[in-house]
Length: 495
Image (cartoon, rainbow, N blue to C red; front, side, top):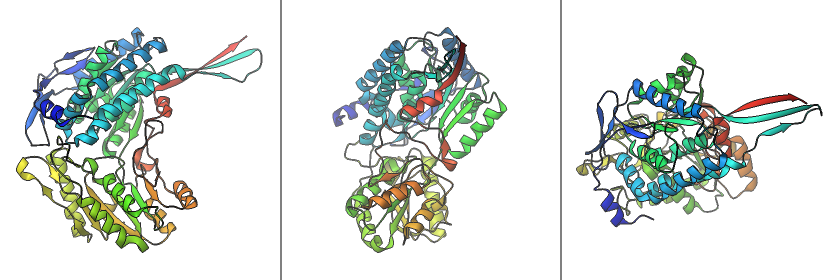
């Protein structure tokens, strides 16, 4: 684990202006303009990134296509790709302190969570797919004896990766690692408010021996660089995590360009369902509080809708409030802080807008609902709980992506299922019960890509993550993620 002394030293590091990463080297943007990077910790600028444009995206895509066609990566021996990615995982671990602090300065995630979820998780993901490279086989079809049917798995070509600002390194690794493992070349468009760790990852990849052009990073505004990547005629697939409106736009770009494949992991309004027979109500309350308030609620699978069975509602709410009040909001680079900053002043304003609307619609504010620590200049918000929430309210239907929890009560299992499935989303969920039959029925009944039972969060790289309904399609994590980045080619051979 990182020490406070290391954190305090690294937070003083001068960053300066960072260029793009194209064809294995840092490069200036074509416009010559930079975007200022402001830390949500104190509201002060601390770095700059190149304001990339469509010409920069084209440079990166051409570099990736050249590298793919050259075949120094795409057709290289699996053992070579495995060696390079394993070395990259080692370098990410070696630089974990640097990467964790750099990311926190960018987006405000509390350092305890950031250290595990960003560099350590990314290193584990890269190593997992490195180990898988020489263990994934093609197939031989069952045919007549005078025919040989072979099914080859081949890389797609150039993959565009667009990631969000909440966990850019972790989520980036979920997409970059399997794409590279399959032999593709990649162009990454990082979030404009949290680009620094992915730029550093590209440098480490070059140091690990990844050939020039195989991994490129183009920073800039989403409306410019993201659109250019989505519309580019020489990009074969887009892997995206982010909002529903942007996901729809990427589907439109695909239709308007070359019908590139688009894989979307979008928003969620995840139900966290507590039955009266939950094994330990106090523990369920602690985990539920962490499941919505850690990283200031800026987690795609956050349990933002809490459904509690009526017979234990009052008791559970007491435990939940107690657990919430024990959480310390503060400087995310202080190991004593349980919750860090909201990612930006703009996101904080959006969160507070949800609070105002919930009060107007009749929800009762139990705790929080306000900006705190304003004297620091940073963007901090108190953990917020509303009860008396109904399904018609905005708070029950729309993703806040902030530390705001809406609580409802239910009487029966059937009512819990109805409430759980009553949004357009279907990303994650949880069920707390000691009854095995109830647990299995709920796993089947809830429309979500992930159903936790007697826990919330913590699923590792061995299982897939993705949603149903308007939470998107395609899966990150696990061996199933590799399926997005390969083509199947049939060879039908007369003997």
